[in-house]
Length: 254
Image (cartoon, rainbow, N blue to C red):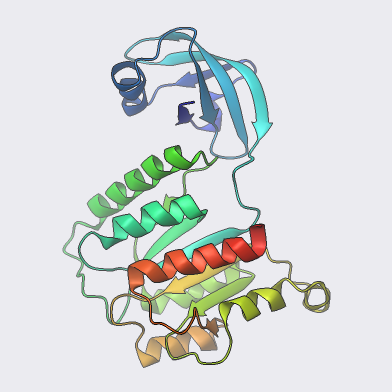
């Protein structure tokens, strides 16, 4: 079943309007949908619908709502990935696979050892990254399109930590605590009762090629990031985020 995304303002009591030109082209020219066909639609906030196409032209498609359900495919815990920007096309792979794994938001970060430089085309890159996210989400039938934010600098990273219940910092020099131990502690009912900290939002901080500088590692830990190990091997930047996200989802969602 084909899936499309609209804003809540496009959903009425019994009708849904799709007016995105790319979606309309995809519906008519690629999928060859016609009046009477059924599709799935998400309002990107809370609800997903089964709907029937009533009419469709180059400007909009009008759909009749047949069924309405709360999101069923979204993780209960929101994970934001702060990804050290990698070189070449690795970022698109990271976005695609992390969207499939359930990430809520991705924030690219220019870190001390980031090779890529800002050449004035960041907005174009960010737009492209959000298109990659939108395409990936259609394949895995999620309810929202994870947002890829505009890149930030590492000095601004820790200012965001206050928004999260847990900040995980996979670090190649960590020899003690594993990510599993950190997650087990954070989800322990006694720990939650004592701290009053219910795990709803998690930040995951991944470095670029070359890892974190010593100054960055110290800054992240000082701001409340939990240094954890992902295992005995050192993972590439394009692998580390996916692996850590899969571990989080396994521990918290399955």
